[in-house]
Length: 314
Image (cartoon, rainbow, N blue to C red):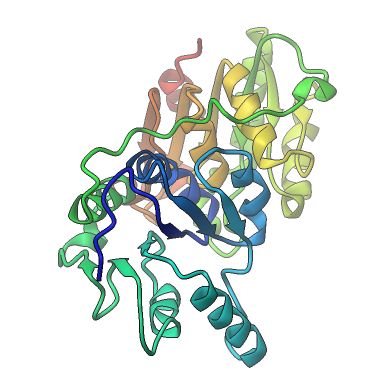
């Protein structure tokens, strides 16, 4: 099988399905792959929530949004197999490295398979570090790419993201609050009343608190804003691009261990990210130029004063 050197042509597939935090942590690897394979046609396989956002970058020539067929849907799997084989890829960078993405390697057989960077048995460039699951995603992906010949991975760059956030009518000085998180893991959330108390303190300093969250967090956002009349509730109203652009203009941000905080931190916003015993910041903390992690076994034990002291706004 021919080796695809850096800068050469060829056809490259990158696999990254989600979730949001993982996608943001892969932005540096995306850039590194594009830089290394400058003359190649690069396709990203992802899922619908991230496809439109990533099409706005210059990392990929094509973006596929069908990366997660339903487990028992044979038609979807056969369709994906046809598409993978028709792509005639020379190399695949599996940045998902899951059991699911390992099946994509198998779907490409029998016969010619591309070079493959990942963990699936039989691939050409295996990331065989037995401690890989104990590495932060940034270091893990960087090591994986180094094995495949990509020596340097830059930090995430969101300068390419554009969005019209003027429609929200925010003042010049505001801070972002992200009180939500995975609904099935409530212990990862700082109590809503603490966010409201922080919001009132920010407002007293002339900084408008802006609450962000997904459509399924409308009640949570409303609960925080009901306790702080000065707060702006954008829960359920922002796109991924909006979050990045809002972060570029924000004085600071506080949020739980959840996807939007990865976007906010990577955009350069001074960020305080709150962790409980439910997750390990050594493995999953957002990365950015100004990130502070506060951790308590129970976030109910984290005082508002401690969060305020950690937040250094610009």
